Length: 198
Length: 168
Image 1 (cartoon, helix red, strand yellow):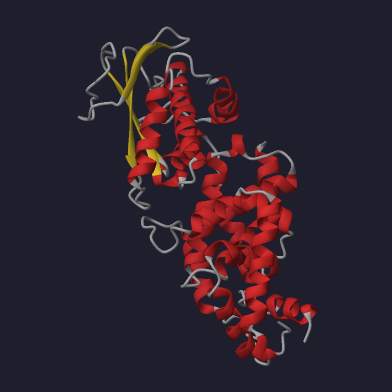
Image 2 (cartoon, rainbow over the protein chains, first blue to last red; image 1 turned 180 degrees about the vertical axis):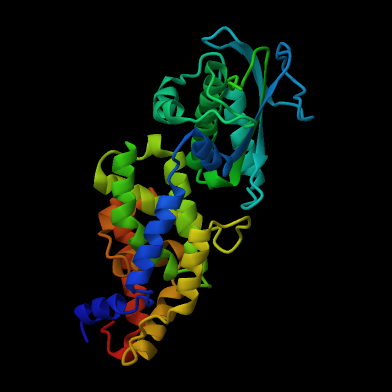
């Protein structure tokens, strides 16, 4: 038996898979169900890897150890004025995803990346562009905790950009970026929801 | 990557990614959860997916590779669509090649005995049919590293499979 025989043995060793038409149909259905159709769906997808909570109220000036309205201390925080003039304080912290416990090293790398990021100058223009179709299609639903105001969209964009940066740092060191999530709490001095006509 | 291009990528590659999981997870139904996770990550990170279709496909396999590490450990609510796929994978018998299955099991055991980095290259090359240079992109290393891992793996496998007449 020669080298070609070894290749043949390896080729036919592949475990069998479920090759019936019904699986193709079911895979297509899963793909359709996974596609975000609006910003709310995008948020659902994002929530798989982190937690973003917005609140109205008085935006306190963010200090180095901002106590968020969720009751935890932020590891990094910023106060920014959105393009509609709304002032928002945002706090962030690195956390472990419950599904995939990260290594202590991955958590440290993620925190270092968060602390090394200048929250005032991080570029969110690419994320805003990416969000644009979803924001345009977003429906304003009474009672929904999130609506597409300038402040909430820009807050969301900062959260996404920061999440990507932290996860990229974790992946660059050979750890699973999905084991890390970024929690965020945002408080703004203006309305975060669009008024709904009675 | 645009939503349309991402949908096209998913349409063309989701089935292959499902097969990738089916060949590796302990419980066939878990492949459905893994596929769903990969698709969620693709949509969430779509700004990072390469525009080139081949690069995007390899990027998708890279996501699948990291997702596999957590297979069977995920929890949470599943969509009805994922439940339906899980049920199908559980209920449908796979096409076992009766003539060669005994031999295939022995070859798989020989592959399983390889160091992880070598095993991964052999499986992706022979089971998914990925060229070595593409495997390098999926695992995030150089083509020369993948080639040397593959050569070492073949040498070990030839030795392990000598009883089947493979020349050593």
